[in-house]
Length: 267
Image (cartoon, rainbow, N blue to C red):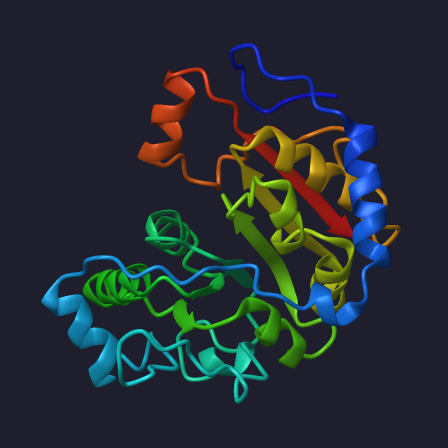
């Protein structure tokens, strides 16, 4: 198995234990697997960001403002992400990427800036990041970026088959405690939803700095026949140039922390 980043010594990952836990998770009654993969955390934000979140003034970017703070966005009416760009310069037929959980939005903003012919949609529950990204995208005059507040699983359930060219999941919450593994976004059930909305030849790209989660994702994705690993079964991918190297990630690498990329193509 290859790693995308040179790193200091790490713990030996028990892949058999991962397989056992995934098997037990698959046997868990469905109603107990339907739990949030995220946790809303209230943190400080500027007055300008608060205003963006509640007044709807950037509706051309932030598409489902709740009108109040602390409220999870409603995605029930969002059934076609391509339609969000129908009146934009790229139009609805341009390649489209969905990023799940963009945090403060730095890498998604840079990707949208660097790839103007691709449309990008980011979904997040962290309000400071939502407001900040919408503000910066507006200041930069980006017309190929939309921001959604809400549950990514609920959004995926609303979308049609073969709808997206790329789904990306960068540094998701690793839910490192064993009792919380069921909250990890990458499970067979949840990735089946991703597969359904991807076009044939579409791409799923994940990155994490938690080694156990990296091998967990590898096990899940390598055992899904709907996906192929262009770097070979059991192998991670080198970080592609299009994924920005954030200051947080660079600081971790400097201190010897590993970062793992996984890229899979819908067969």
